[in-house]
Length: 292
Image: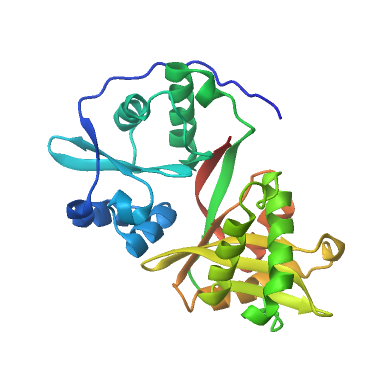
């Protein structure tokens, strides 16, 4: 494991206050999320499903208020995810967060996520500064219409009869992408998560010889936007032109859930970026992810 240390950065000093949001804040929260629906689809999906209160959501939402108005917020669960944040909000969250880190990653718009990490590290030290990996540039892409290439008709929604093979493919995808197995520490939790994706009709795959060789999930849905994640093609089949038609079918299926389909991808993954562009995705932003 590599311990990466960010450069020091001052904390800033805007005027405002942080508080944990509750169910009475839902209208203001939805207005905030709606300002950047593609960027905020993960947090929006969670809040639309479970509300704002920490008891129902499973984690607190930190709100940053200035002049009596909710200006930004931060999802403070396993993923620390800033929403519509400026420098003052980031500085306030750093003080509110304190020295104990409970999240496993920081994810969000690149400049904001990196700024949050640097300030937390400068203020509180190694608990926040020592990380497993930093991915500073992850293009956010979206497609707003039908795909530009002919979809592969073999890609379809997965049913529970495909559970074993789909789960195996999901574990391989996660391990390849993140660098650690998702079943370390809590295998039952990941199994439940994958089962929920299948049961909700948000898991798509291509089966050859009884085995899932391509997969993708719709991980988040909020209003007119959904976010595809977990895209994986069996390494033995890569480079054969299969990915673009398979992804085109995923777009078709995902657009029955929400008309705008988004995703984000590592900037160094040039084959994936080329595939998504060929399908019709365009860049609409940039994320960064800090993995602990």
